[in-house]
Image: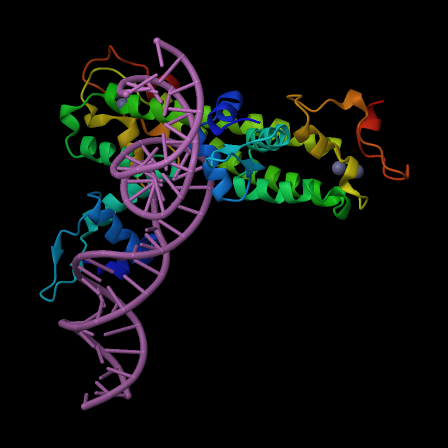
Length: 159
Length: 159
DNA sequence: CTTGACCTTGGATTTAACTCCAAGGTTTAT
DNA sequence: ATAAACCTTGGAGTTAAATCCAAGGTCAAG
Ligand SMILES: [Zn+2]
Ligand SMILES: [Zn+2]
Ligand SMILES: [Zn+2]
Ligand SMILES: [Zn+2]
């Protein structure tokens, strides 16, 4: 039997996290000591590891609660149910990735358009792109010219 | 001059969002009507569009606040400052993408290992992977066998 | 017998970006 | 003149997953 701090250290989480999981129905210690201390069994520890593995592949605690209820009653669930949870999560993750990829492309385009030099930002391509109503930065407009032609890592590259 | 609802509709946000932006120092109407209604000028609208464009490339409101302060005082900032913000955001986005890619790969592997059929989940590869202490699912262990050999879209594929 | 490490509980706080509500004032159209 | 549609304010609620706090009980060592 582990006390809360022992299990926490063992699984590299905080004791607070274990109390949080208990409050939310994910993991309760199988017993208490006479003085009221939580006592976790080896199977409680296994359950915690299950939770942490599910977290590590991206499931939320709400989703893990579902997984756990299947896990405890496997024979009344089908592979289709389990795979459904995984595939639905996969779809969410793919959607999020796609949003972030969009950010990534836009930011990269902004970054590439700016010389990044020490000159005044008065004609910075990034700011101009955010000011303008164009969706994407247009390198063709040669908007970014500094007084000195010394810093040329900007739109002119493509001209 | 736009009233709050007009500007909101024009820019496809809610009036509440504009009040929220005002409370957080991102966008204040340049004037008020006699009866206290917010009145937004065309340049207020431009500022809002700047905010929305920055949001569209992934900046948080806190970061947009920084961008706006640069935007209003361009000559006292360098391209390097602006590009720094973009590059730092880019790094965050890349990190998040990489985390999600890890989720994606793991979930895909779990999904591929499960037959997804109507049989009992008692021997579901997904659950077994989450129970076991192996980091990744191992298809070599042929853990997933159903009574009927009718549903074979699982580990046996690779055998 | 006292210090320090550990444990208990309940409740408050954090982050981000809204979103909603109540109670009331204003404008506009019929 | 009255109803609908709009606006005001302050403040509360939402989501997720913890994290922190205070006041106090327990346990082992010295
Ligand atoms: Zn520059
Ligand atoms: Zn620049
Ligand atoms: Zn199966
Ligand atoms: Zn399965």
